[in-house]
Length: 116
Image (tube, rainbow, N blue to C red; front, side, top):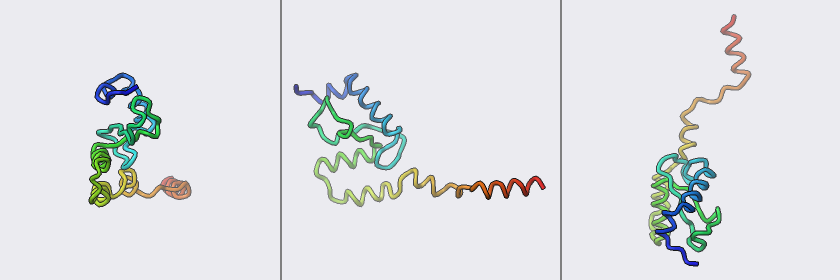
């Protein structure tokens, strides 16, 4: 059975499959960790309408553009573009801006000193 892409993408079946994949990715881009402007990208159209989970990837709009350009064969400077766009994951950037984790020994020491 041949499935027409435009009909399938607007179908309830795709809507359910898309949401399931986004939930599986914890509502984040699987390349950079972004939480906004997410879409589900087909890595292959071989099983369109009967995709396996690994046929799909959740991407933000920027990473999706890169994936589409790569599929079109536009590989020139793609690695450079991707590195400049997302030098570090969003999660990594957040971790680096937070204070170091306080250990229980430090916490106990700080709170015992305040009581005295």
